[in-house]
Amino acid sequence: MKNLDIAIVGAGIGGLAAALALQRAGFRVTAYEQTPELLQVGAGLSLSPTAVHGLNALGLHQTLVDEAYAPEDQFIRHYQDGRRLMHINRGRSLIEKYGERYYVIHRADLHDALAAAVRANDPEAIRLDARCQGVAQSDGRVRIEFTERAPVTADVVIGADGQRSVVRASIFGPGAPQFAGYIAWRGLVPMDRVSGILLDPPSGIFIGPGHLVNRYPVSRATQLNFVAFAEREAWTEEGWAIRSTIEELLAEFTGWHPDVRAFMAATPPQLLFKWGLFDREPLASWSVGHVGLLGDAAHPVLPFLGHGAVLAIEDGVVLARAFAAASSVPEALRRYEEARRERATFVLHESRKAVRLFHASDPENYARVRNNRSADEGLGLFDYNPVTAPV
Image (tube, rainbow, N blue to C red; front, top):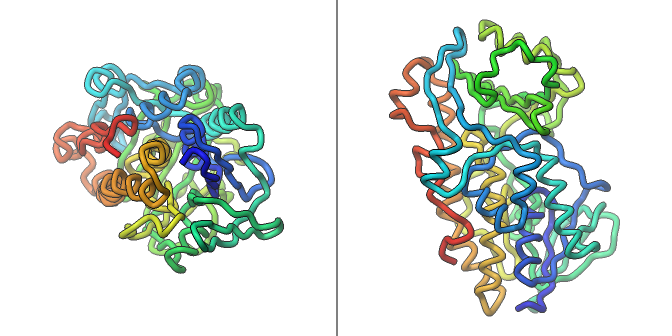
């Protein structure tokens, strides 16, 4: 098995986590990325204790220490008057229960660290400007077709190419994600622009009818990252880096707490984007023959539990463990899928439910409805560990 030629289509967080985990397990891996440069679109992301266990196993603990923000406490506040509705501890209590804490980090900082670690093991492991057109299988080998480069063959292909995965379409047939009824804005604000704004604690959520705003520091606490959600009946624009305006954002959040509107207004216009949220129904299987799926290609989830990147990291760690434990490619993919599909499907469904509570018409009742437990920990999501889960 260690002589396998493993190809990963997509070099995002999930693809690179899988590549690094497989390398550390002794496998030869090549990741193919469609972009000409290895850049990450986006801003902040959340890392639960489960993802942190995985990153620690990949040798990236120091990246979290150096680059991530480690919130001790988080408040959920009322959208109009800012009063505290619920307190959540993200530090000491999680360490006591789960052996790790919660972090938030700029997506690019984590992505850069993963890419550097993969390249340190093999400088040629990441191939850029390689846009996949499809995959085909024959005699235990998989052929990857690209738009403007020669095809390659591998013993196994892992599709980590996102929600609109070409690999997924190749093995399971066409089908587009469906608009989920929500749009989001993301912004990055230099901290010196928000020095007088309510940031106690710096990580916090404001909830109101049909809307939600989450904000926390990133980039060594030099920037405030925020994501603001609203409901929509339809959405037709493609991409998740669509330019927006401060005026459009503020109009959507009319009547919200002055501090929320203040950090929105302080956003440099070039750092404000919007996108529509899309969803898919769970797949009955993630693999066919020698081709499997990972991350959003397998199980795109809405962001309301902050588990998109978390699941992708978990997938990568478990995938490598499954290959290390198996004696054939089909066995490895079966072990991986059996270890992961139930959890990913559960998170997918619960993420859909969570937004209804965040967007409820009576936010003052949130803590009572949630029994004073955070949406993620209250579901038992932190009980999982990708490093020790059975494969």
